[in-house]
Length: 224
Image (cartoon, rainbow, N blue to C red; front, side, top):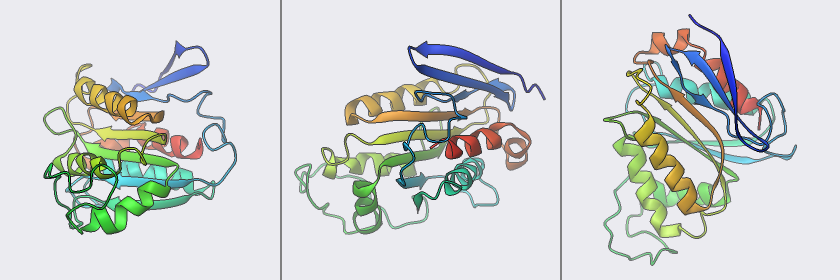
């Protein structure tokens, strides 16, 4: 396995870390300082973190859940409050576009998004979106959550965010559409992106476990 690391400057004071694991350079650490700085995101304060898993596969099989857990393990060393929502196995409904909420109210569906996830997201300092790559986009389970942001769009703005995704494909363009979608979402929601993990070439659990991406996800968690 090629374990070389490449650093390139994105903007003044911002760095990107590319790690070649699973056969591709697919990790972005977009924080103001390198990942080794342990308080770069939280400033040393305890954060409320919401991790949204969206893979329909089990904990034992899923590649994206594996990286999410590595991130959680790293973040837990800093004592942060972490809430994990399983979008694939909770009672959820897609947005109907009925405008019952008027963009700042209860959804017409009194489901797990409304009762369990939304209160946690509103109190969160950091939202972590986790998805396998399906047809070059996020899973339907995660898209359901994102569309339901509509009910609290303004109140969900201004937060920090991260994206973790895994894919079988290893071409250099594999994650382009999803990365563009995520970065557009960040811009629209007025979020501050503090980390992205694009784990290409990781089509099976054994492949991702043999890669560098687990270590990177762990260190990303430690960095906050």
